[in-house]
Image 1 (tube, helix red, strand yellow):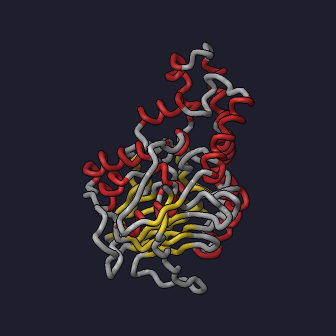
Image 2: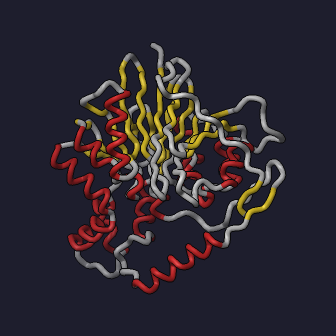
Length: 359
């Protein structure tokens, strides 16, 4: 039977970018609807309405995945869970592992207190859990190797996830004093202001040594082969998560480098990537821009977001032959060749190659 897919990256238009993704695909004469994150609360309402309008007003969703706790991903799933009947909710809840983690938290000797502290720290996921329990929606753990419909979870592993819970800035190990946090915020703003740009020749790219946050590294990464196309959806994962993807790929028959559809991590953040990881996943930099794109890459980024996407990330995608698209105020409808163009949705103009990038 013919397989098909369509992936909708909705625009999350606030001062900060976010992810709100809906998929509909057909395998073995069955149609599945699969939602990944919902952006902020208002975006979740738009995502709900989008599914109703474009996916045939379904009563049931097969899978809903909350990739991690951040509000630009998880908050928007509240209206999704409230409106639809959901067969399976996939998310990682740190408080489930309170008993196992207790020896690693010196300030806690009581499992119940640690569990409560973790629920408070990861409140967006806790809110989704409350709705799921009320509506009797089954909740599953998307650790590496789990099958979510046509998709397999590539990262994180259970062990790395637990390590991230302990090391995260959200950890209840010790409360961060307001003055210290304020100083951190000052440093972040100063770093933003200090970003300089340089002109570069084709192929030049530079990624900073510092990594993305532990919360981003908790992101659930998914891979599927549908209609002959390799689809890799990365959420906000960082370098550790992508390294897990590369290491695990042979186990699921994914021969890297080379994918057909690639979600660029963290809205085009440069602290999630390295040249070596991109070489391993997408292939090495080409000597020049190819006549025809080798794969399609997508960035969920808001027009008002001054920090995303980074130009070096845009360049890195194009260096490897991507046809790069960004939401930037409008949704992206990605589809297999046997799916008709949606009425009123034209092709997105690909991102032009930036001549400069962040030093």
